[in-house]
Image (cartoon, rainbow, N blue to C red; front, side, top):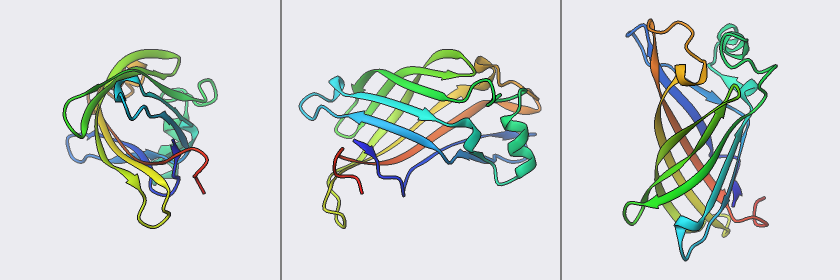
Length: 170
């Protein structure tokens, strides 16, 4: 399955001075899912994010986030997640554990995922899967600790994707 590319979001929230919880996203990313419908635990998932596509809706802040104090996109042009295991928790929820690599640092994380729907898309008539996932991360674990503790260390990662069966994407 490949990204549908019109209804897909990867963003994160964090505490800013205990005053607000900004939402910052990435505009360029790719998700590759090989879904084993007989045994979901045998499925594979890989995500690649272009950190230079970060979008806080404030250009000056985006430039800071792209700089060497944060994502250092000149030196580390890709963020990746590679699933190592998928564990089902019920009919529509699962834990997706894998290796998240940012700034050359790889650490395991677990995404709490929900299969929103799998089936034929009502408009495109193509096989489609919708997934929501989230995880809590400590940004210092990936050398992203600029301004901690004034700016929160804990980040909530949110992912919303629609995936279309390969060969059926428009």
